[in-house]
Amino acid sequence: MNGYKLLQLATATLIGCFFGAVHAVQPIKVQGSDFVNSVTGARFQIIGLAYQPGGSSGFNPGTDPLSDKGVCLRDATLMQRLGINTIRVYNLDPTLNHDDCASIFNAAGIYLLLDVNSPLPNQSLNRGEPWTSYNNDYLKRVFAVVEAFKSYPNTLGFFSGNEVINEESVEQVPDFIRAVTRDLKQYISKHVNRPIPVGYSAADVRSLLADTWAYLSCGIDDQPESKIDFFGLNSYSWCGDSSFTTSGYNVLVQQFSNTTIPVFFSEYGCNEVTPRIFTEVPVLYGPDMTTVMSGGLVYEYSQEVSNYGLVNLNDNKTVTLFGDYNALQEQYNKIDISQLESGNATATSLTPPTCASSLITTSGFPSGFKVPDQPDGASDIIDSGISDAPSGKMVDVTDTAVGETIYNPDGSELKGLELKKLADDQSNTPNSNDSGSSSGSGTASSTASGAQPSSSKQGTAPQGNKINGSIALMAAVLALLLKL
Image 1 (cartoon, one colour):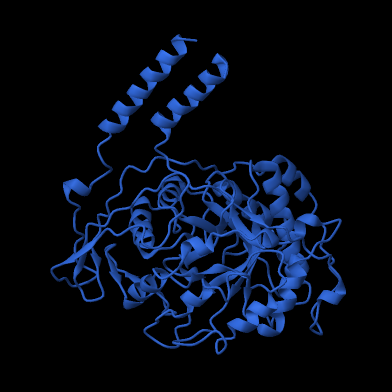
Image 2: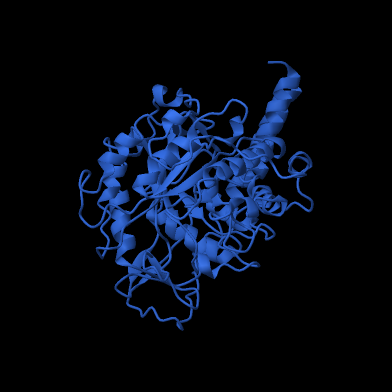
């Protein structure tokens, strides 16, 4: 190795020592029907959770789930302790600063799956008249979400739509979803330094499900970007202590057995039987399903009007865990992570079929594959980028202790919770964070004052050893260079 190359290596090493405190997961990419770690090549299975405190109806510009540093630290720590590696966030304000929250989830080894739409006017496709909502103002909105999150390595992907296709949607909707997918992927190609997957989240309408997947995932020669990169299914068919066959999971596995893109549950967790015991988890991450499915996201983190919450967010920022949280954690702890990460050369080498009417099996489902042209001026927006584009960057996470009071289901306090900052090549796994111990008893009232962390839990560990080690390394490198 010549002196110049050695100097480059030494410089990179020293930069890593002094500025490498921003821990980063490795970006995920799509290969065939699998998600894979872009650096290690290991298969990635989504062990995830829907995260939209306040519910979709509670979304107001000026705040969103990834804009409050303290709340994100509290929730990311509880999620890391739970064992998840991905969250799905439905409604985002791209004008806000998300650096702290994205970095906190990143340090916890948790990826972000993000919807680009919102329930506000002109921020989603109209399933009754999609041509009226597909315009440049709408595209600027979805491109702004890309701009706001493109620089975070833990941005796993974007949903171009959620349950837009259903029994009430008009037949042109699938084509418009392909159009939005195309536009997003073209924008990402021009303005992001890595590919970020774009997919769709489907309603579990069994009469439409297979054709929705087939229509959106096949290839069109002159519209290659309109193909989705992954397919999410919102499924609640496993209720209580069900089974692989009773729930119909066996039918889904058969239905998607020849998929050429990752398929996963973008929502799951039936609440018709309570408390939920999540016996579907070992099956979803077991040999019956992992050959076809890429995991799933439990619905949902916080208790809302639909009664799916794992925790209750009290008015004073304290949190009460429900029994469902502990039940889900217990099931996650049974997952064989090494088996999940095993690669499959066949799955990663698959290519999509060419779009043809023969792929569609249901009468009345469109089969023309006529992707709409972009609105006038949209190509200029894609080429030049949106004006006043938001931007994000990773920041160091120095505070790791949870300051708010957390209550167990029995009312006792869960003390000593702390975010565990993972190494740069790690995503979170079950059992990775065992912080927190129960002591005493408490009442999870909405007016109780939050407990303060002890001095030993505030911030990060002392940095003296790290700095001294870096100085020693610098001295060693300089001594080596002087001998050249």
